[in-house]
Every structure is written in structure tokens, then in C-alpha cells.
Image (cartoon, rainbow, N blue to C red; front, side, top):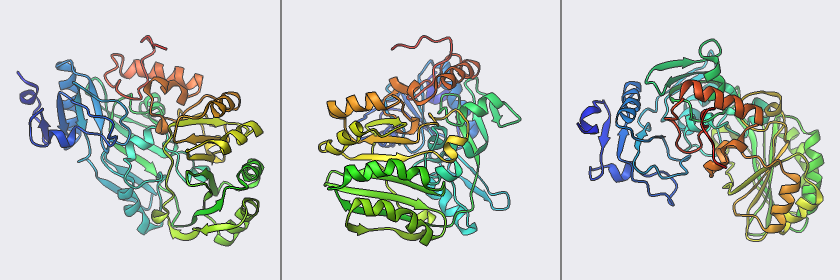
Length: 415
């Protein structure tokens, strides 16, 4: 019996050659051209459960895709579950809580929460899927004040590898709940996610552009300046391909106070080329992002690393301030004690690579990691061990082993 006949679902089952197959098999990454054995477009939790059981019955690899932003490998020969149609968003303004389906995007949540003066811990793009972003940790522009998106999760509904529908929360399956809050999608298919919203409506945000002449001095000043700023201020420095130095910032307090906090940094940077700082509604704060071809965290921006980054050719470099609530919270996601991250959108020069090797932690962050072989570097050693142990409990056969997956504790991991 073919899988199309065994999969009796409310959504659609697409095989190679079917209308719609070529559209729904592709992720966002144009470099990938996957050829799954079957694409399942789920209409609800029951469809997700049937897809998991069908993949196991037919011994097919299993992969999940909502928006396709987090897809880094081609799922050839797999059952590809598409959850984009499960995009419901419900906001409870009294409890300051949102509940979303696995296909919801941040733009949907922003639009639903804004009329109540509330905001989610969203990322830089409204098109990114909520669930995948949150399971991977979720570093947004409110993170220093309110924490990672994963830390705001209150409850999740999950279809497990055994095909059961479980609730994960502080009082039910607490080990699974801990793992889902930053450990990625290795533990099941999340079909509903409930998380806190925060009383943020308007922010002072944007970017100020300078020439590059004083880039080294500005970065040197930045490493001390960040020690004195409040958690309500998030910032990053960019060295762009066009030869500019850009200071990006978001402040949730009084705009005049925000400007006063930023002006010492701007003075070091030199004459302003363009001032894009504005008071805007939070959903309209377009902060942008840098593709993380190279990512590491550092405890100190030493002089050698600063000089190497400033000299990096044909590259966009982003230095971002972490700390604040990120460091005070505990959870599965990230190396939380590092105050800074360094992102390059290219492979670094040998000089920068050596400087990062000396000053960096050798870490990554799951949302910024394109290489599945380095998944362990997104976690502390203790959390990696705990995540693998929990994986062995809920998915011992590694059904959810596609992409940036945590392997079960008893599985041998190749170097």
C-alpha cells in the first residue's frame, strides 16, 4: 500500500509529479534543491500525528518545515511535513499571553498583540516562523531586558516520536519542557506554543551611520561603554561592505534618555553621515540582521581582534551586546555568560580566524548556525549532556534527527 493511501489526512499529500509538489518541497535557502519522497501539508494536530506514524511505518526520514528559514540540509527521500497552514494566533491581553500554531510568523503575532500595547520577543524579520525561532533560542532586540524568546515559553503541545500528543510545561513533562526552550526541534513536532507577551508599544530604535575612519576607536570604546548601559538598551556595531560604521540600537524607555545614553558612543565614532533613530511602534522597528556565516561569542574584544575585524576585507561584521536578562536567566539555550557576539557574513581571513580562536569561546547559537555538524557548540557542555539524555527518553530512535538535531545519549556522534 502506498504512503498516499495510508495517509488519510485533512490536509494534502503530495508525491513527485503532483501539482504543488515542486512549490512545497523547497526551503527558503535557494542553494538547496531537496527531493523528498512525499510532502505532507498538515491542517491540524491529527495530521501531524498521522505523518509521524506514517514516516515510521514506511521507514522514511522525517523532516519538518514551516517557513523554511531554518532548513540547512536537503531532505532527499524523506517525509517532509509542512506546517505553514497551521498559523492560528490567539492573544489573551489580560494574561499577556499568546498561543500560536506551528505555521505562525512573527508578523502575525505583532499585529495581534500591538492593539493591546503588548509585544512578543520577536526577531529582526516579521516573516520568520515563531515556533522554529523560539525553539532555537530566539535572540531579539528585547532580549537584554526580557530574555531570549525561549525563556518566555509557558507551555507547548507536542507530537512525540511515538505518535502521542503531549503537553510540556513546568508541571507536565518538565524535562521535555526544559529541552524545548532552546534545544531546537529534536524532541517532537510542536503543534501549539504558549508564551508571554510584554508591555512594549513604542521604542526608540534605528541605526546611525558614520564613516569608517574611527572604527577601531569606536569598538574599543564600545567594550567599556556596554558595561554602563541599562538592560532596556540593546545595541550592535556593524562594519559594512560599503565602508561604513553603523551603530544599531533599541531603547524601550524615554527617547531623550536613550539618546543621552548613545551620544558618548556617537561622539567617538565621528561625524554622523545618516541618523535613522526614531520613535516607532515596536512592530515597525525594522532592525535588520546579518547573515551569520561565521559566529562566535567573546568575553573580551581584545586589541588584536578589533584590529583584525576592522581590516576584514569585503565583509559585513556585526558585534552585538548580549548580557542583561539573557545572562541572568537559565535554560537550555546558548552560552549565556558571554557579553558579546561577533558575526561575519563570510569566511574570515586567516588573521581574524586566529584572533577569534584566541579570544572567542568557539561557540555558536542555534538560530545562527548553518552547519549541523556543529550543533553541540550551541550549548554548554552540561546542557548538551542533559539535552542528549532527554532526547533518549522522548526520541530514542532519532526520528526527529534532521538538520540541527540533538542525538540521543546512546547514539555515537561522529566528529
